[in-house]
Image (cartoon, rainbow, N blue to C red; front, top):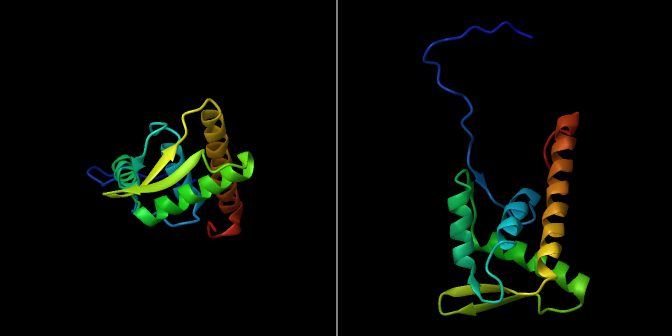
Length: 138
């Protein structure tokens, strides 16, 4: 280890560049699904409001409507694969744009927790690969 000197008034280099969320990126999907797990149940929630909430909570990230919709569509597909019904997560629209409605039943919360855990594990695995020197985070 280097014996580094203190230098008064040296700015902190820990400035993070913004991250533009992309469809299919597990790090973006993790943030989206984590928020979706906590939205009100049994009533339509505007996707635009979800996008706004994500951008307010994750100031170093930029989420757009299509990326959020893609993550919700994947969540809906996972629900249909697990429960063989489309009732759990429904996409719709109102006068202001796309909406998502998550059913208000006792099976939703534990299932959502599993979805978030699965995404978190994918993210951790990508970070482990990166730390092992695999180079780029795929």
